[in-house]
Each structure stands twice: as structure tokens, then as C-alpha cells.
Length: 352
Image (tube, rainbow, N blue to C red; front, top):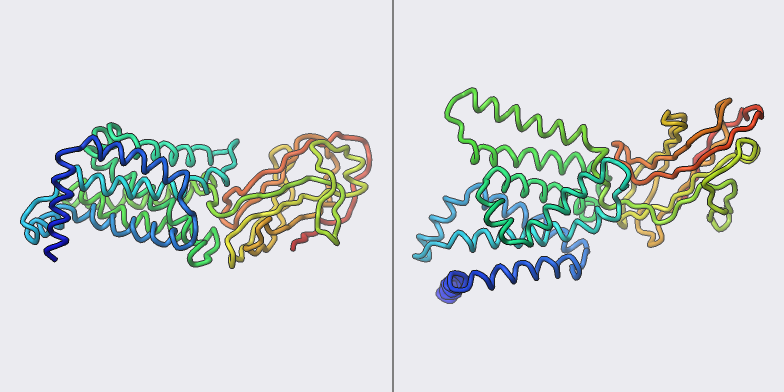
């Protein structure tokens, strides 16, 4: 106990004497975290636990500070406390950010969520922004922590517990909303009953916004490794023919069209996804596929569409979605219309 007390007091004295060195180390560690961190299941577990513990610290900071002062006979400087939380934010954001950068569909609303994470990560490695602008604004400080926890859980839960993306989103959102209430309570003390009801309403509203905006959140652990829109597919090798960005209506009716996707997923994960065929922005078919994680090149799944409307010409896309509607990716192609009768056959899902 005496050794730990001595080390803690030495660390406190060092941070008070050389605050600039601490700031520089924080910036360098943040950059190294982004480049060098090993994104494995064990680290995902540690990240999630560290965020939960640090949330408890932020909520009970004043009480825990008094307890430590009583035990060690010295108050921990506020900059040191902020630095410890800053390091957790850095490690967490730079652990999850590459997952979201890979899985984001950039020409969709997912750009906003991933951009928000990237902006938060940048703030954590720039001390003037983090300590002089963010940290003094308590509500913004706790909002960053809640966002970081939410993103970390989205990434960690499928890896650790093999939960589906839909299950992980519900649990991550529920946890973030539940923990945001005491954070809001600390930031906005309830002095009258109506303020308590307002805080409950605000917490529920945050949950509602998070649920309605789920299509804007990338599925952190699912991404496309290979895609193709093609008229041919080799069943034996389970590989697509030449990918197409433009096809004639005559060829499409005669041969049908395959939407081929190879999807990377964590080992042990079993999940249902959907190929949603859309013509000029209108959904014309939704086909379910069950995928399984663990294959390095991605789980190969495809749909073969042969049932088409009378008019085929225009812009087509196949949106690859999770059960809750999160976008994994989009395949786009154009059909050149020709006056040929529609085929009566139906769409068939295939996967491996």
C-alpha cells in the first residue's frame, strides 16, 4: 500500500511540474492507438469494461475524489483525472473507428455518424480542444463519453457475445440511454418535480432518436469484401461472372440477374440479412439470406432475380441490410429498356 501511495504521489507531482509533456504524450498515444492497436476480441472486452468503469467514475467523481484524498492524504489534480479519461476516450475511439470506416456506406446518412466519431477522435488528441473547450462543458463531456460507449458496444458485442447486429444495436442503445440518465442528473440537478419529468422525457427522446436513426449507423462488424451484379454465377466454385454496371432489359429477362455479396463477419456469428431490390427508388423485392461468420474472404451469398416488372429501364440498386435496416452496402446498376415481355418466374435466394 505504501509503495502504491508513493508512486501515485510521484505521478501527481510529475504532472503538475510538466503539464506540457503529459499533453504531448496524450497526442502521441492517440496517434499510435489508431495505427498500432490490435483489434482482437480480448481488447474489445477490455475497452468495453474500461468505458463502463470510467462512466461510473465520471458520475461519482466528486465522491470518489474525496475518498481517495482521505486514503492518500492528497487530492488528485483535476488535469490528471481528465487525462486518464482522455486516454480511455482515445483508446476506445481509435479502436472502433477503423471498423466504422470500413463498414460505412459513404453516399448515405452513415457518413454523419462516422464523421462524428472521427471528429470526436480528433478532439481527444488535441489537448486545447479537449481540456479547454470540451471538458469544462459538462454536458458535452458526458455526451462524448456516451457516444464512445455506444460505438464501443456496437463493435464489441458481436465479437465477444456473438450477438447479431440487430441484437447488439438494441443492447448498445439501451445501455447508452440507461447510463445517460444519471449523467444528465449530475449535469442538471433536479430541484423541482417537473425537472425530473423533463429529464426522463429527454432520456426517452434520446433513445427514440437513436432507434429511428439506426439506418444511419454502420454495422460495425459486417462489411462487404466482394460484390457483383452479373448474369452468370458458377455454382461449383461459388464465384460470380463479370460484374455489370449496365445491362439491357432483354438480357436481364432472358438470363435473370444475380446480386452477389461476400460479407465479412466475426467468427461464430450467425445473422439474417436482406437483399432489397429497388427500381428508381421503389422497393420491388426483399429476399432474406442467413450468413455465418468466420470465413476470411467473407461469407458468400447471392440472390437470383427473374421476376421483373413490365418496365425495366432506369436505375436499379440492391441494398444489403441487417434485420433492423442498417445498411451493409449498396450495389447499383442501370438497365437499358427494350420492348420485350416480362418473365413470370420468381426470385430465389442462394448462399454459402
